[in-house]
Length: 177
Image 1 (cartoon, rainbow, N blue to C red):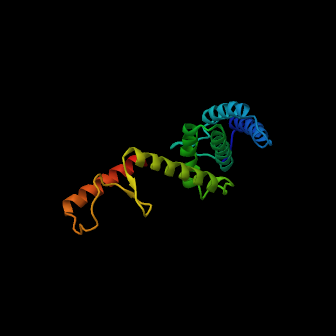
Image 2 (tube, rainbow, N blue to C red):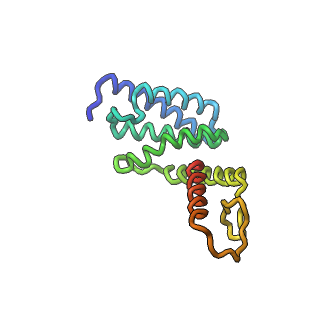
Image 3 (cartoon, rainbow, N blue to C red):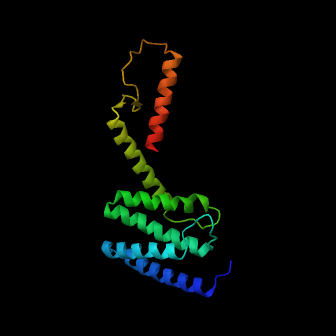
């Protein structure tokens, strides 16, 4: 895909801002405030240049990699800042690069690390959610979703009761995700 003069200038501007961010980020002790300022400007520039994927845009590989790399630094920055909502937003944006464009983009060095951290975050939310719902962690390390404890001698469960429990379980899992 050919890039016209205006797009090339925009790409150079965004690339220069990214290099500024990367230089600060790669320092032994990066200035998180400065990184946050550059990230904010970069996100706006990415939107103005239509670098973030939408249904009507066709982006070059270079534009996609640049946007992904900016968002990865943003996710890592969010972790250092202990800004969980920001981390969630960055991860939501990164997922399209990791999954929708996985065949078009080279592998990212941070893909597995960030997806793993996101999974740990989601699991921690599930534990909090389970505690709020009054679920009990059993001796086998499985959560019990039943509101009433049953004796092991009770061998039969009416099918209607079982169906209600399964539906309630599915609803609760859906609320977690």
